[in-house]
Length: 202
Image (cartoon, rainbow, N blue to C red; front, top):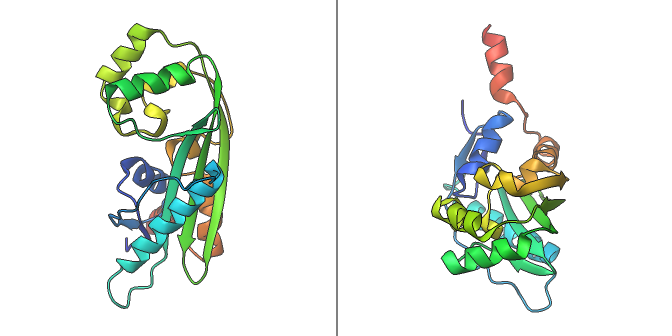
């Protein structure tokens, strides 16, 4: 099936989530400065970065190609502090200690650049049970935390730490599907298109 959109992300998780709802896409690799601005709120931060990624992806489209461009950005927020991807073992363990036995917020902004540019923001609250030092070390040794915001993956082994979730599971993964589907539908893009096509063949 021909791609319906460009996805301005190298995240395999976001690709999996788009496949899950039957949206054919082509990934575009983009680079943006992810430094937070002074006095910028976490919500403002994720929306700004998602918009920057979407615009960067739009600039990489082949000449004459006007397919919409989707991008997202996720931040784990604990005590008002944005927790990005850990720089190494010590930072990852420090993040897990910060999240241990308490609730934190996960914000994911999604932006679609089409005939017009629209954005949505997903906010979820995730609660962790207490995490022991030995299991934090073992989790780091699994390799999973290294490239994850907040140093954990809800869709992976990090799920053993989560005692409750209020909000969007896919949003915590990195692409809130409710909000994404809303943006795509508003732009005239058919959700579940792959599955409609299969049904017609049958």
